[in-house]
Image: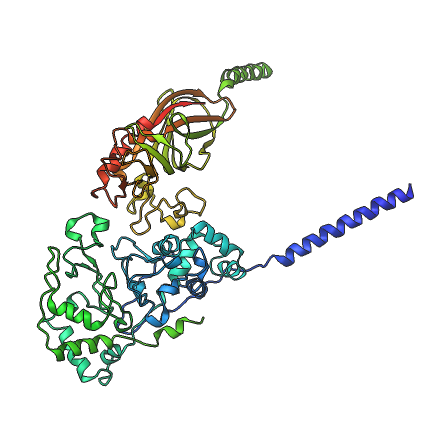
Length: 346
Length: 254
């Protein structure tokens, strides 16, 4: 009888030790990461307005850092070969030099990659302007079969398993990766991409030596009533965010804005791009069909091709060779070569 | 005296309980059986469209929303937040309600995503990224135009023998119909009497998919229709197909 009781006691002890052991192990394994919301202060250039930040996605250091990591990580593509930075290359003002973006398996996208600098100011995304914010935009390239080709559901599974992301999503959002917090993190990082310290900016901030005489002549021409470049490429970001047909073609293969509106008056209209950092974001136009700034100036000088939807502002400019060179030189002054370096590391 | 009153009250309650015993609450499901030529739809299998064209389907997918159960007294129980995605590779068994009681005479549901969830100005409009990845309305289902935000109501994709030579694998003999936009949102209503008795009720309906192409000859009409809005040149074709929905859905059965 005594032996039997001892056996029972022994079994109970073993069971208790097992339970305590399992509990301690579980506690040890459970990292209790608390959400942090350290405000991220944007470094806005003096001549720039405040950036509109959606109330549902305030900038925090934790979200920006998570977004930065996601932006440079090919984990976002189905075969882990393409990251956002594959097309939005920091050294090329977060654009690239391909006529049209290259996605997974070398697939050629529909359009030229735009710069992401100052994208947080954009009132809409994509060349048809139908995407209202960065949060909504983020999903498109990730899932598009010609870009990253990864299902959002599969992406979240990858992120949940990844030690860094598992921890950083908890830190930034207090929860595991979801579609909502994934897009918010990337949007936060993209809003930090600001370029506003080019030679031109230094000049308008009072450094009269920041521009050469040729660049100053180019600036005068650019803002002149004769050329009217700034009618569309005006404002702090050198775009009015409008849609224009510049007469690039008589017949447009890519119908542009009309793709969304189905309005024939919108055929060939594309969003007016920013000219900031334009000298390094070649090739140009919606399809990268013009290789150099010289090609672009020649195109505008000729007044574009005949097209019923062509903007009335596009007409022959009768520029002299010196004026063409001055204009190009001025456009070059809008580039901020080293702006990208601060985005490579946290 | 008190006991007598209590006894009478209990008796009345018991009487009514017995009387209502046939209306215990039930779980209600909707099961959509995708069919072709009266049999379960098989992907990449030869069928003949109502217009006599040899066709195969490689994808059939559509949203069901705004379900209402219609009571005998014409009251309706409406489920505005239930969204389902029927798919040719799924069982398509959808839970409508965990517990519902009563005598019913029919059901109504919409095909597509109604404007409360598909219009940024809608009162219930929710950005697509807010849905969990396993939700019917998540963009992860590839039923969402991300460049022009909005839901694709239905995808019908496959092959069609448009050259009428009996061969389906020729280049260009594919079709792809993507429907959408509020003008293409249609309701299906079917009469069916049922009473909840405690057991699960599975309201089944067959969807004869080739019937979407009734009076729609893929040889002469658009076989690739992807409108970007209701003014788009493809939209009238999409509308023709959607307007065949009543010919697609059969009667309800259990």
